[in-house]
Length: 296
Length: 153
Image (cartoon, rainbow over all chains, first blue to last red; front, side, top):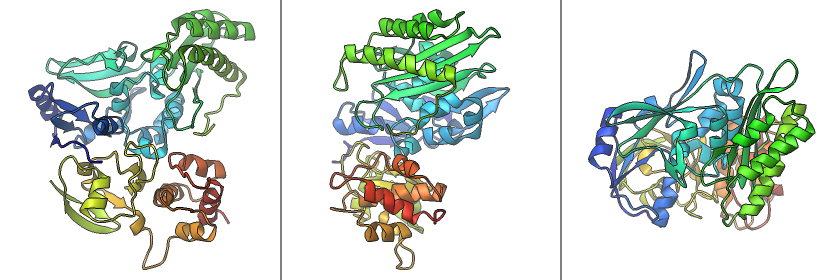
């Protein structure tokens, strides 16, 4: 089945892309890899008259580090991010979570900016970006601004982008020294599915073995990806004993506000959050967490 | 829209409307029907082709996005009339039943073996995780890919 016809605008500068977005606002959609938008076009969920493609803006695909900060251009592909040595060595949590997205061919085309802008609650990269305290760089008619990723997801498939704005990059600060981190994805169907729940965590331990830093990001736990703040508070200042980890997992399950859908009910999701937060924290603590291959 | 790219090793210029995907371009524009039209939403993997050596879903990528890139379809796997070792291994090991998923399987496997000539069985399964076979299962497909891996002997 063909896509409904549209006009394709292919700007070659960011300024032209913003001008096109301003001129066509309301009737145009941005497209990068197309892995989220093309199925929506095919199903008729969106019927734009025009698409503005970002694929002729190679500067937006750049992956680089500046003074210890990782900068991912908005159209950097998930495949390039998971392979980039700087990411694997400096931000292994991100490499691990990105590697779990769908299947290899989807990651060849799918982009980090597209993943953020789609604002899927069951996103693999989002919980990792939340834990890594990433910052979303946005350009628009009023110039550029930064949005912490913790404030980027505003509601069910809703972001903080204003009309005429687009994401140009994601900036990720250096990971705290000695941090332990990991991502687990639970899918009751096939491994390449989106997560029923996804859990990312990053902790640092002080010299007495207590959690100095504790960050937990959850996918599939609410209408948007979220940080599990109450669970983090349970961990901070405490050694990650079995009892503390269990209490943190319980707090995460309680603060989650999951939705029911065809993949699973809200109650089932809540239970799985309890299980997977606990398992991940225990495995990180014991040094037994391994970046899982994309197969359960 | 005029598109210039490399197709199966040869320069190619083709006309395509803006709303065509790579799958429309290959099957309807260029009559290369080896690439199969399955789910149309990127899930089944039958339309997998290579772009600059990496697997893509032809049904999800706009034709405009292949400008300047090198595409390989199942028609381009053979060299001088000789089948690719993957194709030979699939045939010899019975790694196909109805054959509908086979072109996508071959190209997903080709991308893997190009990047890693000696993958483990687990890595093969992971590389093929987005390619569905509804006939017969995956054991013979994984065996065939391992048998064709140049770094394993």
